[in-house]
Image 1 (cartoon, rainbow, N blue to C red):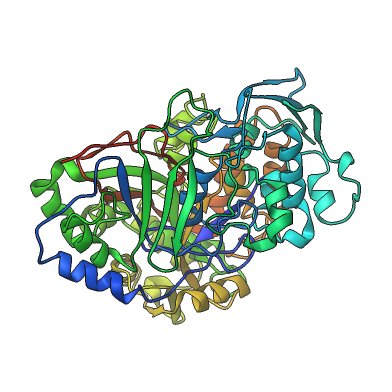
Image 2: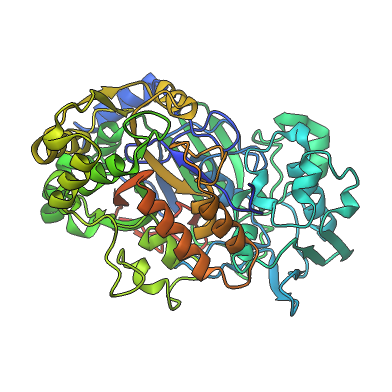
Length: 567
Protein backbone atom coordinates (compact mmCIF):
# COMPACT_ATOMS: atom_id res chain seq x y z
CA UNK A 1 0.00 0.00 0.00
CA UNK A 2 1.26 3.47 -0.78
CA UNK A 3 -0.24 6.39 1.04
CA UNK A 4 0.12 9.58 -0.96
CA UNK A 5 3.16 11.49 0.18
CA UNK A 6 3.54 9.40 3.31
CA UNK A 7 6.99 7.99 3.75
CA UNK A 8 9.95 8.20 6.05
CA UNK A 9 13.51 6.98 5.97
CA UNK A 10 15.39 5.09 8.65
CA UNK A 11 18.81 6.53 9.43
CA UNK A 12 21.61 4.60 11.01
CA UNK A 13 23.44 7.29 12.93
CA UNK A 14 25.28 7.52 16.20
CA UNK A 15 24.80 11.23 16.65
CA UNK A 16 24.01 12.91 13.33
CA UNK A 17 22.38 12.27 9.97
CA UNK A 18 24.22 9.86 7.69
CA UNK A 19 24.25 9.19 3.96
CA UNK A 20 21.75 7.01 2.10
CA UNK A 21 22.68 4.42 -0.47
CA UNK A 22 19.51 4.44 -2.62
CA UNK A 23 16.13 6.17 -2.87
CA UNK A 24 14.45 6.09 0.54
CA UNK A 25 17.39 4.16 1.91
CA UNK A 26 20.05 5.38 4.36
CA UNK A 27 23.77 5.10 3.91
CA UNK A 28 26.88 6.32 5.63
CA UNK A 29 29.76 8.17 4.14
CA UNK A 30 32.87 6.65 5.70
CA UNK A 31 35.88 8.65 4.48
CA UNK A 32 39.05 10.05 5.89
CA UNK A 33 39.20 13.78 6.56
CA UNK A 34 41.65 15.93 4.70
CA UNK A 35 45.16 15.70 6.20
CA UNK A 36 45.65 19.43 6.02
CA UNK A 37 42.48 20.06 8.03
CA UNK A 38 43.45 17.57 10.70
CA UNK A 39 46.87 19.14 10.99
CA UNK A 40 45.21 22.52 11.30
CA UNK A 41 43.00 21.22 14.11
CA UNK A 42 45.87 19.53 15.89
CA UNK A 43 47.97 22.67 15.65
CA UNK A 44 45.03 24.83 16.71
CA UNK A 45 44.71 22.88 19.94
CA UNK A 46 48.10 24.21 20.97
CA UNK A 47 47.47 27.73 19.79
CA UNK A 48 45.58 30.55 21.32
CA UNK A 49 41.86 30.34 20.54
CA UNK A 50 40.99 32.40 17.50
CA UNK A 51 37.75 33.48 15.84
CA UNK A 52 36.68 34.36 12.34
CA UNK A 53 35.99 37.99 11.45
CA UNK A 54 32.61 39.45 12.27
CA UNK A 55 29.90 38.34 9.84
CA UNK A 56 31.47 34.95 9.01
CA UNK A 57 29.85 31.83 10.42
CA UNK A 58 31.87 28.57 10.58
CA UNK A 59 29.77 25.43 10.93
CA UNK A 60 30.87 21.83 11.31
CA UNK A 61 29.89 19.63 8.36
CA UNK A 62 30.03 15.94 9.29
CA UNK A 63 29.58 14.44 5.80
CA UNK A 64 30.82 15.55 2.40
CA UNK A 65 27.78 16.16 0.15
CA UNK A 66 27.39 13.89 -2.85
CA UNK A 67 25.54 16.70 -4.59
CA UNK A 68 23.86 20.03 -3.91
CA UNK A 69 20.95 19.43 -6.28
CA UNK A 70 17.61 19.59 -4.40
CA UNK A 71 16.21 16.90 -6.69
CA UNK A 72 18.93 14.33 -6.01
CA UNK A 73 20.11 15.19 -2.49
CA UNK A 74 19.02 12.71 0.15
CA UNK A 75 20.33 13.79 3.54
CA UNK A 76 20.07 16.63 6.05
CA UNK A 77 23.85 17.08 5.64
CA UNK A 78 23.29 18.13 2.03
CA UNK A 79 20.23 20.22 2.75
CA UNK A 80 22.18 22.13 5.42
CA UNK A 81 23.88 23.79 2.45
CA UNK A 82 21.08 23.61 -0.13
CA UNK A 83 18.76 25.61 2.12
CA UNK A 84 21.29 28.42 2.12
CA UNK A 85 21.31 28.39 -1.69
CA UNK A 86 17.63 27.88 -2.52
CA UNK A 87 14.14 28.49 -1.18
CA UNK A 88 10.86 26.70 -1.85
CA UNK A 89 7.36 28.12 -1.94
CA UNK A 90 7.27 27.60 1.82
CA UNK A 91 10.06 27.05 4.36
CA UNK A 92 10.09 24.96 7.56
CA UNK A 93 9.10 26.74 10.73
CA UNK A 94 11.96 26.33 13.24
CA UNK A 95 9.37 26.45 16.03
CA UNK A 96 7.37 23.62 14.46
CA UNK A 97 3.87 23.58 13.05
CA UNK A 98 2.71 25.41 9.93
CA UNK A 99 5.53 26.42 7.55
CA UNK A 100 6.57 30.02 6.95
CA UNK A 101 6.30 31.95 3.66
CA UNK A 102 9.22 31.39 1.32
CA UNK A 103 9.22 32.28 -2.35
CA UNK A 104 5.43 32.38 -2.01
CA UNK A 105 4.15 35.36 -0.06
CA UNK A 106 0.85 33.62 0.68
CA UNK A 107 -1.40 30.73 -0.30
CA UNK A 108 -5.05 29.78 -0.06
CA UNK A 109 -6.80 26.41 0.16
CA UNK A 110 -10.07 25.47 -1.50
CA UNK A 111 -13.03 24.53 0.67
CA UNK A 112 -12.69 20.85 -0.25
CA UNK A 113 -9.01 20.85 0.80
CA UNK A 114 -7.84 19.68 -2.64
CA UNK A 115 -6.50 22.84 -4.30
CA UNK A 116 -3.65 25.03 -3.01
CA UNK A 117 -2.95 28.31 -4.78
CA UNK A 118 0.43 29.90 -4.08
CA UNK A 119 1.11 33.55 -4.89
CA UNK A 120 4.79 34.28 -5.55
CA UNK A 121 6.46 37.37 -4.13
CA UNK A 122 6.76 40.20 -6.66
CA UNK A 123 10.09 40.68 -8.40
CA UNK A 124 11.67 37.32 -7.52
CA UNK A 125 15.05 36.75 -9.15
CA UNK A 126 17.50 33.92 -9.57
CA UNK A 127 21.02 34.61 -8.32
CA UNK A 128 22.10 35.32 -11.93
CA UNK A 129 19.50 38.08 -12.30
CA UNK A 130 16.93 36.14 -14.33
CA UNK A 131 13.30 36.45 -13.22
CA UNK A 132 12.00 33.51 -11.19
CA UNK A 133 8.54 32.50 -12.43
CA UNK A 134 5.85 29.95 -11.68
CA UNK A 135 6.91 28.09 -14.83
CA UNK A 136 10.37 27.57 -13.27
CA UNK A 137 8.74 25.91 -10.27
CA UNK A 138 6.72 23.59 -12.51
CA UNK A 139 9.83 22.70 -14.52
CA UNK A 140 11.60 21.84 -11.27
CA UNK A 141 8.72 19.66 -10.08
CA UNK A 142 8.57 17.85 -13.41
CA UNK A 143 12.29 17.15 -13.19
CA UNK A 144 11.90 15.56 -9.73
CA UNK A 145 9.09 13.34 -11.00
CA UNK A 146 10.93 12.26 -14.15
CA UNK A 147 12.26 8.73 -13.72
CA UNK A 148 15.59 9.56 -15.36
CA UNK A 149 16.36 12.04 -12.57
CA UNK A 150 16.25 9.18 -10.03
CA UNK A 151 15.11 11.60 -7.33
CA UNK A 152 15.35 9.74 -3.99
CA UNK A 153 12.59 11.84 -2.45
CA UNK A 154 10.08 11.93 -5.29
CA UNK A 155 7.60 10.38 -2.87
CA UNK A 156 7.32 13.76 -1.15
CA UNK A 157 5.24 14.84 -4.18
CA UNK A 158 2.89 11.87 -4.17
CA UNK A 159 0.04 13.73 -2.46
CA UNK A 160 -0.30 15.69 -5.71
CA UNK A 161 -2.85 14.36 -8.18
CA UNK A 162 -1.25 11.86 -10.61
CA UNK A 163 2.30 12.61 -9.39
CA UNK A 164 3.06 9.01 -8.48
CA UNK A 165 1.39 7.76 -11.66
CA UNK A 166 3.66 10.08 -13.70
CA UNK A 167 6.76 8.69 -11.98
CA UNK A 168 5.78 5.14 -12.87
CA UNK A 169 4.70 5.94 -16.42
CA UNK A 170 1.00 5.29 -15.85
CA UNK A 171 0.42 8.94 -16.78
CA UNK A 172 2.69 10.25 -19.51
CA UNK A 173 1.45 13.82 -20.01
CA UNK A 174 2.68 16.17 -17.31
CA UNK A 175 -0.32 18.44 -17.82
CA UNK A 176 -2.39 15.67 -16.24
CA UNK A 177 -0.39 16.00 -13.01
CA UNK A 178 -1.89 18.40 -10.46
CA UNK A 179 0.35 21.39 -11.21
CA UNK A 180 -0.58 24.55 -13.09
CA UNK A 181 0.89 28.03 -13.62
CA UNK A 182 -1.97 30.25 -14.82
CA UNK A 183 0.33 33.29 -14.72
CA UNK A 184 4.02 34.00 -13.91
CA UNK A 185 3.30 34.62 -10.22
CA UNK A 186 0.80 31.85 -9.46
CA UNK A 187 1.39 28.14 -8.76
CA UNK A 188 -1.70 25.96 -8.38
CA UNK A 189 -1.43 22.46 -6.88
CA UNK A 190 -4.27 19.94 -6.90
CA UNK A 191 -4.15 16.98 -4.52
CA UNK A 192 -5.46 13.46 -4.98
CA UNK A 193 -7.01 13.54 -1.50
CA UNK A 194 -7.28 16.15 1.27
CA UNK A 195 -4.12 16.24 3.35
CA UNK A 196 -3.83 18.77 6.19
CA UNK A 197 -0.08 18.10 6.37
CA UNK A 198 0.51 19.03 2.72
CA UNK A 199 2.11 22.45 3.45
CA UNK A 200 4.84 20.58 5.37
CA UNK A 201 5.64 18.65 2.18
CA UNK A 202 5.78 21.86 0.16
CA UNK A 203 8.38 23.14 2.65
CA UNK A 204 10.55 20.03 2.26
CA UNK A 205 13.88 20.11 0.46
CA UNK A 206 12.99 18.58 -2.93
CA UNK A 207 10.39 21.32 -3.48
CA UNK A 208 13.23 23.90 -3.71
CA UNK A 209 13.35 25.07 -7.35
CA UNK A 210 16.32 24.77 -9.68
CA UNK A 211 17.05 27.04 -12.63
CA UNK A 212 16.07 24.94 -15.68
CA UNK A 213 18.38 26.86 -18.00
CA UNK A 214 21.42 26.30 -15.77
CA UNK A 215 20.62 22.58 -15.63
CA UNK A 216 20.19 22.42 -19.41
CA UNK A 217 23.49 24.21 -20.00
CA UNK A 218 25.70 22.34 -17.52
CA UNK A 219 23.93 19.01 -16.97
CA UNK A 220 24.81 17.27 -13.73
CA UNK A 221 27.71 19.71 -13.19
CA UNK A 222 25.41 22.69 -12.72
CA UNK A 223 25.96 22.63 -8.94
CA UNK A 224 29.65 23.63 -9.16
CA UNK A 225 30.77 27.06 -7.89
CA UNK A 226 30.30 29.63 -10.62
CA UNK A 227 27.52 27.57 -12.20
CA UNK A 228 25.11 27.21 -9.30
CA UNK A 229 22.05 29.37 -9.88
CA UNK A 230 19.70 29.48 -6.91
CA UNK A 231 17.10 31.69 -5.26
CA UNK A 232 18.22 31.47 -1.64
CA UNK A 233 19.89 33.98 0.67
CA UNK A 234 23.39 32.80 -0.33
CA UNK A 235 25.38 31.84 -3.44
CA UNK A 236 27.96 29.07 -3.72
CA UNK A 237 31.50 30.45 -4.02
CA UNK A 238 33.81 27.58 -3.00
CA UNK A 239 33.72 23.78 -2.77
CA UNK A 240 36.98 22.18 -1.69
CA UNK A 241 36.22 18.47 -1.49
CA UNK A 242 36.55 16.94 1.98
CA UNK A 243 37.63 20.33 3.36
CA UNK A 244 35.05 23.08 3.19
CA UNK A 245 32.17 24.64 1.28
CA UNK A 246 31.67 28.41 1.34
CA UNK A 247 28.54 30.42 0.54
CA UNK A 248 28.26 34.20 0.44
CA UNK A 249 25.37 36.62 0.68
CA UNK A 250 23.11 36.73 -2.40
CA UNK A 251 22.42 40.40 -3.30
CA UNK A 252 19.35 39.36 -5.35
CA UNK A 253 17.57 37.55 -2.52
CA UNK A 254 14.05 38.87 -1.97
CA UNK A 255 14.46 39.95 1.69
CA UNK A 256 13.88 43.67 2.34
CA UNK A 257 17.35 43.89 3.89
CA UNK A 258 20.46 41.75 3.29
CA UNK A 259 20.84 38.73 5.55
CA UNK A 260 22.99 39.69 8.56
CA UNK A 261 25.74 37.09 8.06
CA UNK A 262 27.90 37.77 5.00
CA UNK A 263 29.47 34.32 4.67
CA UNK A 264 28.99 30.77 5.93
CA UNK A 265 31.78 28.20 5.88
CA UNK A 266 30.79 24.53 6.17
CA UNK A 267 33.95 22.84 7.45
CA UNK A 268 34.36 19.08 7.13
CA UNK A 269 35.08 16.88 10.17
CA UNK A 270 35.15 13.11 10.46
CA UNK A 271 34.05 12.71 14.06
CA UNK A 272 33.11 14.34 17.34
CA UNK A 273 36.61 14.42 18.76
CA UNK A 274 38.28 16.35 15.93
CA UNK A 275 35.27 18.64 15.79
CA UNK A 276 35.47 19.25 19.55
CA UNK A 277 39.16 20.07 19.40
CA UNK A 278 38.55 22.53 16.57
CA UNK A 279 35.77 24.19 18.53
CA UNK A 280 37.91 24.58 21.64
CA UNK A 281 40.65 26.06 19.47
CA UNK A 282 38.23 28.67 18.13
CA UNK A 283 38.27 27.31 14.58
CA UNK A 284 34.51 26.69 14.26
CA UNK A 285 31.47 28.39 15.77
CA UNK A 286 28.86 25.61 15.70
CA UNK A 287 29.38 21.87 16.16
CA UNK A 288 27.18 18.97 15.10
CA UNK A 289 27.42 17.13 18.41
CA UNK A 290 29.23 16.88 21.74
CA UNK A 291 31.33 13.88 22.79
CA UNK A 292 29.32 12.08 25.51
CA UNK A 293 32.23 12.34 27.93
CA UNK A 294 32.16 16.14 27.61
CA UNK A 295 28.46 16.70 28.29
CA UNK A 296 28.70 16.94 32.06
CA UNK A 297 31.94 18.99 32.19
CA UNK A 298 30.67 21.42 29.56
CA UNK A 299 27.36 21.83 31.41
CA UNK A 300 29.42 23.30 34.27
CA UNK A 301 32.37 24.89 32.52
CA UNK A 302 30.78 26.18 29.29
CA UNK A 303 27.07 26.28 30.06
CA UNK A 304 26.26 29.29 27.80
CA UNK A 305 27.78 27.44 24.83
CA UNK A 306 26.11 24.05 25.37
CA UNK A 307 22.76 23.65 23.61
CA UNK A 308 20.18 20.88 23.49
CA UNK A 309 17.05 20.41 21.37
CA UNK A 310 14.63 17.51 20.82
CA UNK A 311 14.64 15.68 17.50
CA UNK A 312 11.73 14.05 15.68
CA UNK A 313 13.69 10.85 15.92
CA UNK A 314 12.77 7.54 17.56
CA UNK A 315 15.47 4.97 18.24
CA UNK A 316 13.94 1.52 18.40
CA UNK A 317 14.48 -2.21 18.18
CA UNK A 318 13.06 -3.96 15.13
CA UNK A 319 12.13 -7.62 15.66
CA UNK A 320 12.30 -9.87 12.61
CA UNK A 321 8.78 -11.26 12.67
CA UNK A 322 9.63 -13.88 10.02
CA UNK A 323 11.97 -15.77 12.37
CA UNK A 324 10.99 -17.99 15.29
CA UNK A 325 10.55 -17.35 18.16
CA UNK A 326 10.18 -13.66 17.22
CA UNK A 327 7.27 -14.64 14.98
CA UNK A 328 5.33 -15.03 18.25
CA UNK A 329 3.93 -11.66 19.41
CA UNK A 330 4.16 -12.82 23.03
CA UNK A 331 7.93 -13.17 22.74
CA UNK A 332 8.30 -9.75 21.13
CA UNK A 333 6.14 -8.14 23.80
CA UNK A 334 8.08 -9.91 26.57
CA UNK A 335 11.35 -8.48 25.25
CA UNK A 336 9.87 -4.99 24.93
CA UNK A 337 8.43 -4.97 28.46
CA UNK A 338 11.73 -6.06 30.01
CA UNK A 339 13.52 -2.87 28.92
CA UNK A 340 13.81 -0.25 31.67
CA UNK A 341 13.87 2.86 29.47
CA UNK A 342 14.07 5.29 32.39
CA UNK A 343 17.26 3.63 33.56
CA UNK A 344 18.71 3.74 30.05
CA UNK A 345 18.27 7.47 29.59
CA UNK A 346 19.21 8.35 33.17
CA UNK A 347 22.28 6.21 33.72
CA UNK A 348 23.49 5.11 30.27
CA UNK A 349 22.75 7.89 27.78
CA UNK A 350 22.76 10.88 30.17
CA UNK A 351 22.34 13.34 27.31
CA UNK A 352 18.76 14.56 27.73
CA UNK A 353 17.09 11.77 25.77
CA UNK A 354 13.58 10.69 26.79
CA UNK A 355 12.25 7.16 27.33
CA UNK A 356 9.98 6.07 24.49
CA UNK A 357 6.83 4.21 25.41
CA UNK A 358 5.17 5.34 22.17
CA UNK A 359 6.50 5.24 18.62
CA UNK A 360 5.57 8.77 17.53
CA UNK A 361 7.99 11.16 19.17
CA UNK A 362 6.92 14.33 21.03
CA UNK A 363 8.99 16.48 18.66
CA UNK A 364 7.33 14.85 15.65
CA UNK A 365 3.83 15.53 16.93
CA UNK A 366 4.69 19.03 18.14
CA UNK A 367 6.19 19.84 14.74
CA UNK A 368 3.23 18.54 12.79
CA UNK A 369 0.15 20.54 11.94
CA UNK A 370 -1.68 18.20 14.35
CA UNK A 371 0.49 19.06 17.34
CA UNK A 372 -1.38 20.11 20.43
CA UNK A 373 -4.72 18.95 19.08
CA UNK A 374 -7.09 16.93 21.25
CA UNK A 375 -6.22 13.25 21.03
CA UNK A 376 -2.58 13.86 20.06
CA UNK A 377 -1.56 16.33 22.76
CA UNK A 378 -1.07 13.69 25.44
CA UNK A 379 0.62 11.37 22.99
CA UNK A 380 3.02 14.20 22.20
CA UNK A 381 4.18 14.06 25.79
CA UNK A 382 5.09 10.41 25.31
CA UNK A 383 1.99 9.29 27.22
CA UNK A 384 -1.04 7.24 26.19
CA UNK A 385 -3.66 9.21 24.22
CA UNK A 386 -6.24 8.56 26.95
CA UNK A 387 -5.59 8.75 30.74
CA UNK A 388 -7.18 5.35 31.38
CA UNK A 389 -5.15 3.65 28.61
CA UNK A 390 -1.73 2.53 29.91
CA UNK A 391 1.07 2.41 27.38
CA UNK A 392 1.60 -1.10 26.02
CA UNK A 393 5.34 -0.53 26.51
CA UNK A 394 5.56 0.48 30.15
CA UNK A 395 8.36 -1.35 31.99
CA UNK A 396 6.77 -4.47 33.47
CA UNK A 397 9.19 -7.35 34.15
CA UNK A 398 6.49 -9.44 35.83
CA UNK A 399 4.24 -9.35 32.76
CA UNK A 400 7.31 -9.87 30.60
CA UNK A 401 8.20 -13.12 32.38
CA UNK A 402 4.56 -14.27 32.22
CA UNK A 403 4.41 -13.74 28.45
CA UNK A 404 7.70 -15.51 27.87
CA UNK A 405 6.55 -18.48 29.93
CA UNK A 406 3.24 -18.54 28.09
CA UNK A 407 5.18 -18.68 24.82
CA UNK A 408 6.98 -21.81 26.07
CA UNK A 409 10.13 -20.39 27.65
CA UNK A 410 9.66 -20.27 31.47
CA UNK A 411 12.57 -18.41 33.08
CA UNK A 412 14.18 -18.36 29.64
CA UNK A 413 14.61 -22.15 29.49
CA UNK A 414 14.90 -23.40 25.93
CA UNK A 415 15.08 -19.91 24.47
CA UNK A 416 17.31 -19.99 21.36
CA UNK A 417 20.43 -17.90 20.96
CA UNK A 418 19.56 -14.68 19.16
CA UNK A 419 21.64 -11.81 17.84
CA UNK A 420 21.15 -8.12 18.63
CA UNK A 421 22.63 -6.20 15.71
CA UNK A 422 23.95 -2.65 15.56
CA UNK A 423 26.30 -0.62 13.39
CA UNK A 424 28.55 0.76 16.11
CA UNK A 425 29.50 -0.34 19.60
CA UNK A 426 26.71 1.09 21.68
CA UNK A 427 26.33 1.08 25.49
CA UNK A 428 22.55 1.00 25.03
CA UNK A 429 22.80 -2.44 23.43
CA UNK A 430 25.01 -3.66 26.26
CA UNK A 431 22.45 -2.42 28.80
CA UNK A 432 19.54 -4.09 26.99
CA UNK A 433 21.49 -7.34 26.81
CA UNK A 434 22.00 -7.19 30.56
CA UNK A 435 18.34 -6.38 31.25
CA UNK A 436 17.14 -9.38 29.25
CA UNK A 437 19.65 -11.60 31.04
CA UNK A 438 18.56 -10.36 34.45
CA UNK A 439 14.79 -10.20 33.95
CA UNK A 440 14.17 -13.07 31.54
CA UNK A 441 17.15 -15.37 31.93
CA UNK A 442 17.98 -15.27 28.22
CA UNK A 443 21.19 -14.54 26.37
CA UNK A 444 21.57 -12.54 23.18
CA UNK A 445 24.79 -11.92 21.34
CA UNK A 446 25.59 -8.38 20.27
CA UNK A 447 26.78 -8.16 16.68
CA UNK A 448 28.38 -4.94 15.46
CA UNK A 449 28.70 -4.61 11.71
CA UNK A 450 29.87 -1.96 9.29
CA UNK A 451 26.89 0.31 8.64
CA UNK A 452 26.29 -0.73 5.04
CA UNK A 453 26.41 -4.40 5.96
CA UNK A 454 24.01 -3.82 8.85
CA UNK A 455 21.58 -1.94 6.62
CA UNK A 456 21.69 -4.56 3.89
CA UNK A 457 20.98 -7.27 6.45
CA UNK A 458 17.92 -5.60 7.95
CA UNK A 459 16.57 -4.74 4.49
CA UNK A 460 16.91 -8.41 3.47
CA UNK A 461 15.52 -9.71 6.75
CA UNK A 462 18.84 -11.41 7.56
CA UNK A 463 18.82 -10.51 11.25
CA UNK A 464 17.08 -11.34 14.53
CA UNK A 465 16.84 -8.04 16.42
CA UNK A 466 18.22 -4.74 15.08
CA UNK A 467 18.77 -1.31 16.58
CA UNK A 468 17.44 1.33 14.16
CA UNK A 469 17.05 5.10 14.04
CA UNK A 470 14.10 6.65 12.24
CA UNK A 471 14.22 10.14 10.83
CA UNK A 472 11.40 11.62 8.79
CA UNK A 473 11.46 13.95 5.83
CA UNK A 474 8.50 15.91 7.21
CA UNK A 475 6.80 16.10 10.60
CA UNK A 476 3.87 13.99 9.47
CA UNK A 477 2.76 11.16 11.78
CA UNK A 478 1.15 9.38 8.82
CA UNK A 479 4.52 9.29 7.09
CA UNK A 480 6.12 7.76 10.18
CA UNK A 481 3.54 4.99 10.34
CA UNK A 482 3.54 4.28 6.61
CA UNK A 483 6.96 2.68 6.99
CA UNK A 484 5.30 -0.30 8.67
CA UNK A 485 2.60 -0.95 6.11
CA UNK A 486 2.76 -4.24 4.24
CA UNK A 487 5.62 -4.28 1.74
CA UNK A 488 6.90 -0.78 2.59
CA UNK A 489 10.63 -0.41 1.81
CA UNK A 490 11.46 0.53 5.41
CA UNK A 491 9.28 -2.13 7.03
CA UNK A 492 12.32 -3.72 8.67
CA UNK A 493 10.30 -6.07 10.93
CA UNK A 494 8.68 -7.49 7.77
CA UNK A 495 5.42 -7.25 9.67
CA UNK A 496 1.98 -7.21 8.09
CA UNK A 497 -1.42 -6.26 9.48
CA UNK A 498 -4.44 -5.56 7.28
CA UNK A 499 -6.06 -3.55 10.09
CA UNK A 500 -2.94 -1.40 10.43
CA UNK A 501 -2.68 -0.88 6.67
CA UNK A 502 -6.31 0.20 6.51
CA UNK A 503 -5.92 2.66 9.39
CA UNK A 504 -2.87 4.28 7.77
CA UNK A 505 -4.60 4.49 4.41
CA UNK A 506 -7.65 6.14 5.98
CA UNK A 507 -5.38 8.60 7.81
CA UNK A 508 -3.70 9.56 4.52
CA UNK A 509 -7.01 10.35 2.84
CA UNK A 510 -8.97 12.32 5.39
CA UNK A 511 -9.04 15.92 6.53
CA UNK A 512 -8.85 14.77 10.18
CA UNK A 513 -6.45 11.81 10.46
CA UNK A 514 -6.06 11.93 14.24
CA UNK A 515 -8.30 8.98 15.21
CA UNK A 516 -6.73 6.72 12.58
CA UNK A 517 -3.19 7.80 13.54
CA UNK A 518 -3.81 6.76 17.16
CA UNK A 519 -5.43 3.51 16.07
CA UNK A 520 -2.52 2.63 13.80
CA UNK A 521 0.11 3.47 16.42
CA UNK A 522 -1.67 1.34 19.01
CA UNK A 523 -1.82 -1.61 16.61
CA UNK A 524 1.90 -1.29 15.90
CA UNK A 525 2.83 -1.19 19.59
CA UNK A 526 0.52 -4.03 20.57
CA UNK A 527 2.01 -6.22 17.85
CA UNK A 528 5.48 -5.88 19.34
CA UNK A 529 6.95 -5.61 15.84
CA UNK A 530 9.07 -2.75 17.16
CA UNK A 531 10.16 -1.72 20.63
CA UNK A 532 10.76 2.04 20.84
CA UNK A 533 13.65 2.70 23.22
CA UNK A 534 14.15 6.46 23.42
CA UNK A 535 13.41 9.76 21.73
CA UNK A 536 16.64 11.39 20.67
CA UNK A 537 17.98 14.91 21.15
CA UNK A 538 20.79 16.91 19.63
CA UNK A 539 23.51 18.29 21.89
CA UNK A 540 25.85 20.81 20.32
CA UNK A 541 28.27 23.59 21.12
CA UNK A 542 27.81 27.10 19.77
CA UNK A 543 29.96 30.16 20.30
CA UNK A 544 28.42 33.03 22.21
CA UNK A 545 29.35 35.13 19.15
CA UNK A 546 26.41 33.51 17.31
CA UNK A 547 22.84 34.74 17.71
CA UNK A 548 19.63 33.81 15.90
CA UNK A 549 20.53 30.18 15.14
CA UNK A 550 17.42 28.31 13.94
CA UNK A 551 16.98 24.60 13.35
CA UNK A 552 13.90 22.42 13.61
CA UNK A 553 13.42 18.85 14.86
CA UNK A 554 14.24 17.43 11.41
CA UNK A 555 17.60 19.21 11.15
CA UNK A 556 16.20 21.82 8.73
CA UNK A 557 18.10 25.07 9.21
CA UNK A 558 17.22 28.68 8.53
CA UNK A 559 20.12 31.12 8.30
CA UNK A 560 18.22 34.34 7.57
CA UNK A 561 18.41 35.72 11.11
CA UNK A 562 21.86 34.46 12.13
CA UNK A 563 24.19 37.17 13.42
CA UNK A 564 27.90 36.58 14.10
CA UNK A 565 29.50 39.21 16.28
CA UNK A 566 33.17 40.07 16.57
CA UNK A 567 35.23 39.29 19.66
